[in-house]
Structure formats: structure tokens, C-alpha cells
Amino acid sequence: MAIRLITAAGLLLAVAVPASAQDVTGTWLRDTGASKVRFTKCGEAICGTISWLKEAGGPAKVGQRIFYDMKPSGAGKWNGSAFNPEDGKTYSGTMSLAGETLTTAGCVFGGMICRSVKWSRSN
Image 1 (tube, rainbow, N blue to C red):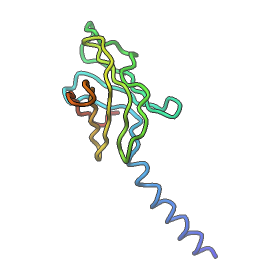
Image 2 (image 1 turned 90 degrees about the vertical axis):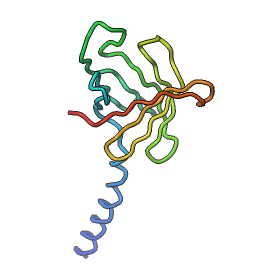
Image 3 (image 1 turned 60 degrees about the vertical axis):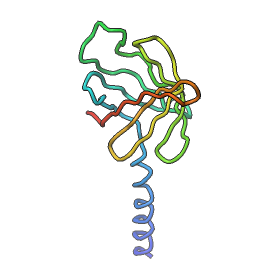
Image 4 (image 1 turned 90 degrees about the horizontal axis):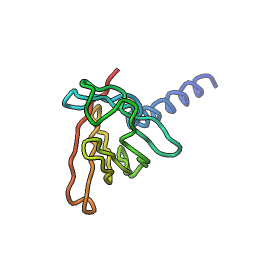
């Protein structure tokens, strides 16, 4: 009986590992090193807020939400809205997680033109 419980617990842990690998929550550093964004659950979606800036004084501000209502759209993928502090506009947004790299994109014209940014996990 004890062996069965241990085996069952081991199987549950094995199944849980891939799910945590798709967890985007936490703090991410932009590939340029200019900013960090903290992604958290906001209801059934994911939201991202600027948590650190290398240089203050620009249009981006710490505490500003730049990713809104990012809802799952497949394994390691989310769709929602992305706000660009540089031009003050909100775009159709996507996020995709591959290993320890997060790629975000803001798109116009139904996704025909997109600008993407890469992020890595940060402490």
C-alpha cells in the first residue's frame, strides 16, 4: 500500500513539472537590460507591470501596467493587449514562453505587422 502511494505521488509530481515550466508569472528582464516587468495573475488572465527601469525620466514609469488581459491561447502562449509607453498606444499583444525565454509582441493590422521583445527571468 505504501509503495502504491509513493508511486502515485511520484506520478503526480512528474505531471506537475511541465505545468510549472509554462508559468510566466514572476519578474522578467528585457533583452536590452533597460527594464523589468513583473507578470502576475489578474483574474483569469496575466498582466504585466513595469517593476524597474535602468533610466528614469522617459515615458515609461515604474508601476505602469503594459500588458493587459493576456489569456491562454495554447501551450506557452497568451493573447491580450500591450501598451507602449513610448507612443502612448495600446496594441494587440501576444506572449510566448519557450524554456527560460519569453517573447512579447505588439501587433497592428490584424497581426500583419508586429514588434517583438525578448525577456529572460530575473530575480
